[in-house]
Amino acid sequence: MRTEQADEVVVVGGGVIGLTTAVVLAERGRTVRVWAREPAEETTSAVAGALWWPYRIAPVAAARAWALRSLEVYEELAAGAAPAGVRLAEGVLGETERHEVDGWAAARLPGLRAATAGEYHGQGLWVRLPLVDMSVHLPWLRDRLAAAGGSVETRTVTDWAEVDAPVVVNCTGLGARTLVPDPAVRPVRGQLVVVENPGVRTWTVSADPASGETAYVFPHGDRLVLGGTAEEDVWSREPDPAVAAGIVRRCAALRPEIAGARVLEHRVGLRPARDTVRLEREALPGGRALVHNYGHGGAGVTVSWGCAEEAARLAAG
Image 1 (cartoon, rainbow, N blue to C red):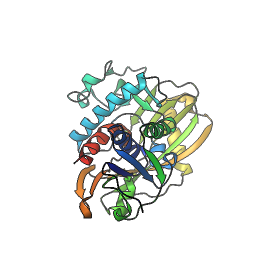
Image 2 (spheres, rainbow, N blue to C red; image 1 turned 180 degrees about the vertical axis):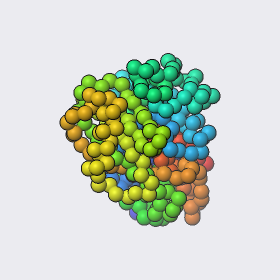
Image 3 (spheres, helix red, strand yellow; image 1 turned 135 degrees about the vertical axis):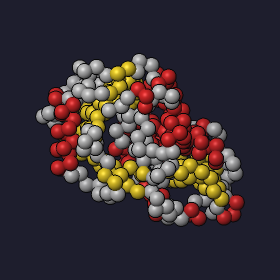
Image 4 (cartoon, helix red, strand yellow; image 1 turned 60 degrees about the horizontal axis):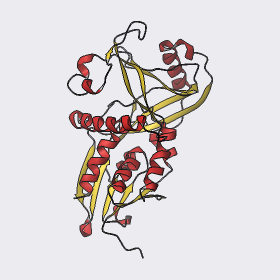
C-alpha cells in the first residue's frame, strides 16, 4: 500500500489548466502527479483556438488579473528558445473599441490602435497578442512537468476518496459536473475547421452584431484554424457539415483567399462554462484538502498561468 508524502499533490485533469497547475506546483517543490482520463492531445484544450483574450469568463476583475499574469508568462515563452508553441502575432479584434481595453490591458499591449479600413471592414483594434499552437504547447507542458519531477498517469476518478494524496487539485473542467458534482458547469460547444494556409499571416476575430455569429482565423504555419461557434448546452462532439460550411463561408468573407482552401481536419470541443470560475479550497475527510480550479469557459489558455499560481497558493494552505 502506498504511503502519502506530506508535500504530495495529485492534480486531477490533464488539459491546459491541469498541466499548467501541475507545472507551477512541481516547480515550487511539491511532488506532483497528474491523473488524467485521457491524453492532453484528446482534451478540449487541444481543440482551442488559443488566442490570448478573456472570452466567456467571469468574474471579470479576477479573470483580467489572471489573464495579465498569463500574458507575462506567454511573452516570456514567446521570447525564449524553448519550443513552447507560443508566438506574439498581430491581428484584428473586430467589433472591439479602445475603451474596452483601457484601464486594464491597454498599457500592456504596445502598438494597440484602431484597425484601418484596409485591415478590417468594420470597427476593430489592431493588436499583437499571444497565439498558442496547442499541438506544441500541451506536450511542452507535459515535458516541463517531467523535468520538474512530476508525472502523468492515465486514471479516471469517480470519488475524491480514490485519490491518495494530502492535497488534491480539481482541474477536471466539464468533468466537474459529475465528479464534484456541480450542475452549474455546462458545455458550450465549439466547432473548428482546419485548412491549408494559403498565405495568411495575421489573425482576425469578428462578430456579426445582428446575428451574433462569430468568425475567427488563426494562422499556425502551414495551417489555418477557422472558427467559431458557441452552442450552449450542446453535448455532441460530432462535427456538423452544415456548421463547418458556415464557418468556412464566414471566414472567407473576412479573408477571401480562404475560399477553396483544402480542408485538413474538423474539430469539436466542449468548453467548460460556469457563471464564475471556481477557484477555492475546501476540506476533505481525514484532514486532506481539495482545491478547485475549473469553470474557465472559453478562456482556459488565457488565464491558465494566473489561475495555476492562485491554485498553488491555495494548495499551500
